[in-house]
Image 1 (cartoon, rainbow over the protein chains, first blue to last red):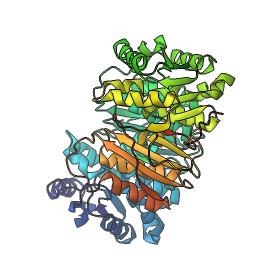
Image 2: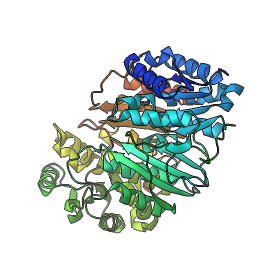
Image 3: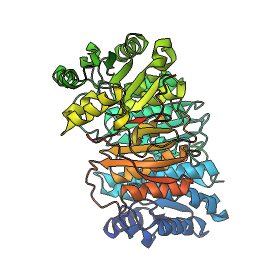
Image 4: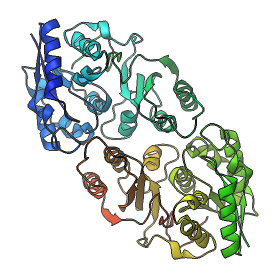
Length: 275
Length: 275
């Protein structure tokens, strides 16, 4: 049996949607046991409970040796308020675990990767059950957690990789949570940002990513309509800023805020490299 | 006569609004001559003309010894694409000039300040004429440009200061355009961002501002309504992140994306310190 602890370092989930995820897992993944921590359903303003509760729950899940993985219930915003302390306080049991999530969860994945704790993995979350064809996303995550690599992002190769939401990565750059991505292929995706904001984020992020092996661009979706056309498409923006920064642009990546979002283990994908 | 060159490193202005600004200056500031460069009205997708045109125009204005100041027509987004090259290529005539603007223009102000070129000043732009009571904002800028310090932000003291839009500053952090703000009082303001995004920006910015004398918070305006209440007000957010980063929180600042936006010369306000 592979036991998976689910907690919410950012925003709250609902019991109804958790029940759907549990039902899907029970029907199709008999070797997995999902345990939604009650904290997933806590609510304190924007967050899934106060910082102290989100922190203690994340530590509880990471440090419990009876769990094999920690799955982040949902993104939104909030992990950055607790990620540094969480990583600093995690014990031995965390080192053998997979940590799976994306979007705002990338904050925690980045901090874990920097600290060399466990196996951070960018991939679907329980909250993806709400998307159209969201079962496929959840199924992809559960397939990975059951030891099957078929949901890996297809362009991953022998080079180490990392994947982030672009804004999340921008906010990590230069902070105590930012991992060293030298030599890595960095995959980024974005959602609900104006293209001028995407351009601005690329300025910032490429200024911080010198020394990476290259950048690949996932989907940039739900771009709000602006009062005028920006004048470049996301790929052109990525190529432009990579060119200015001397970063190889390596093409498209099959990640995004959608049900097709593929799995990107941090580090070398073919290894299941929890430390 | 004080001659003021107006150009648009970010987004385009209109001839109608330029005419209103010129009329106001002609009526009330007989010692000022405003010269709107035609590039202010150019349009290329999002921008006031292509990068090459915005760059060459900015250099033309900065390097023309017959001008005493360069006034940025409008913010929006775009200065970051040309600021580094502009600053690298500016000649002697730029060093004696005041450069006045805010919002996206803060990118250029920051780059100038880093390079020690001229006197960068955060304050109203011609585009503020469009605001309710916008004449007061334009008048404040023209008053400053005519040598009168009455529009200075009232809390400025003997310590060096700098003022930025929060997002603009966040995007500068850690890049080749970021000035050294050690020992400075840093004033920030924001507009049209969700409070969770403001919180996220404060995480990033405070991580990059260790060593500043303190932070003051201008107005955080036009906050979009989210699907739930964030749970903290802007001042609480600023206090929280300043506290975590060991940065003194020094209270409110009278700046913002509004007609009341006061003047903040970079450096020590009581000096007119163009180099």
